[in-house]
Length: 435
Image (cartoon, rainbow, N blue to C red; front, side, top):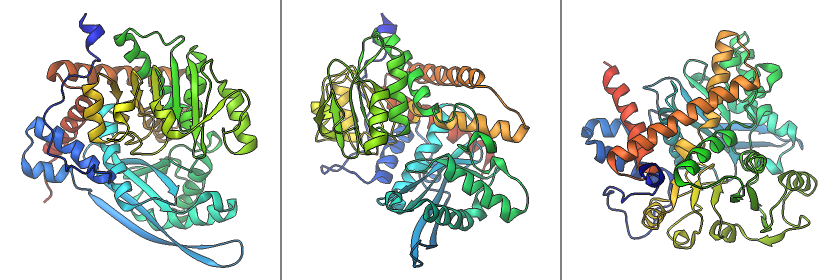
């Protein structure tokens, strides 16, 4: 009976008072989540200040020559939140709405994410304020290489290892690796992860986030007595993580009833073929308008009735304003920070299980770790070994979170945060302060 009920969110511990107006600043949200765990763990005030403050923040200007000959100066960031457990690890995103507070929040979440799955990394993140959809490939390459040269003093295979994120990919990582290697004068494959396999990338990296999410959802479904076969799944965001998740869940005979991208969404209660959706998007640039499905908005997708809701886009999509309307039984966060603290409280009261980002989407950073290990040791693991290792780590991390839930009678996000913060706090205390 305990196994069947453990995933029902318990009453969360008392959180720091939140202002009546919902907080949507991502860094403030990250700090609110940390403060809850710190209060629960009764951390020393000085240690709290260390763990809630980024270790290093770098802002750079990126002069970039455009194809028309003009020079545009863009702004980029690299934030290292905490390095107590190992080198910084975190992606780089190219997006017109990137802000420093967003990058600081993402770096903090990376600290907790790597600790939740217990891999030897700290947390970091990068971003450039740009619109890659309006840039040519040559413009993107010039901008990426200049950005890499500007953040080069604080990145490296033993200090801080970037990876792909929103609107960056394996090609982006290859440009960064090549730029770094040319400047230091020798090949350094381990400076980034998520590279093409031809230049030291790992098998399975492109599917890692979605596959790790699948492993976590499978474990949650076992506890909640939900059969994944025939379960209805709605996915907001049809980028790499969302599209791959749609394919993997369909392979498990789940029914994909809704998909969306930045232009809107589509739904069909009888199911959507993710392969047809991907081919349609490759031709038209969006899933909207694909045959055999009705159009819906992104907001409608979030509140439709389904067994599993997968937010796989950006942060702050499940908020105080729509949490009461959510009808999913499980929310599996493929995106970083999609649920606000107010929404978390509402969903917990309503008995909806939220599988938190720092656990559920940690498959990407886990396989990034595998890639880094392979680069450091000159190894090459095949896809079967990668998947087996990933499943072992994700299932173990899920078990650790569930054990924490049972021990402290808290819902999944609180448990994951308590687990992660305790691990980072221990490493920080053991290392001590310098000088």
